[in-house]
Length: 176
Image 1 (tube, rainbow, N blue to C red):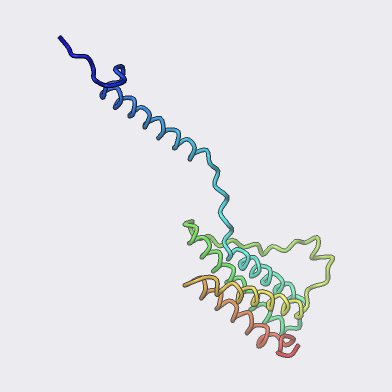
Image 2 (image 1 turned 90 degrees about the horizontal axis):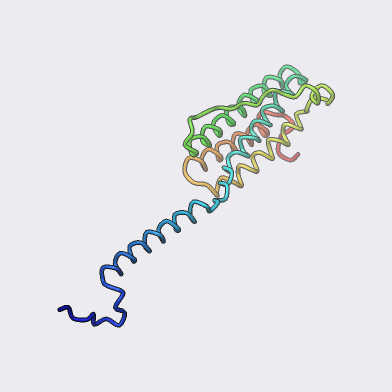
């Protein structure tokens, strides 16, 4: 004859407790996975170099437009400056793509808008100098917040902008 179960809860056996515990653990795991899947992650912050690339493209377009109305000697400097700022934009775009794990693409938005460009007077050398000063200041402020290649790239771009408006363009001389 079987002896009565000595536990205070005779309907619960060790085997039943283990089976129910495993079921409970499986349910808890499913609920945890479902709640993680339902959570929305905030969108990633934009790369700080994106703004620098936009500035470089803008400076390139501005210098190219100013070169069309400038005297030949100054037009050559502005044309070279436009090309240089275009190379800056390409280098920044390449670094942004590299960090994002995307294939390097060089996007160029150098097509000026014909409606507003035709009505407005062409930019002056002073306009180009002001844009270069702003770009250099922006790059100089951002460079110390970055590290490695990215910081060096911005430092180089800032130095290039400063040398362009202080050396290559006559109205960018110190003291103005």
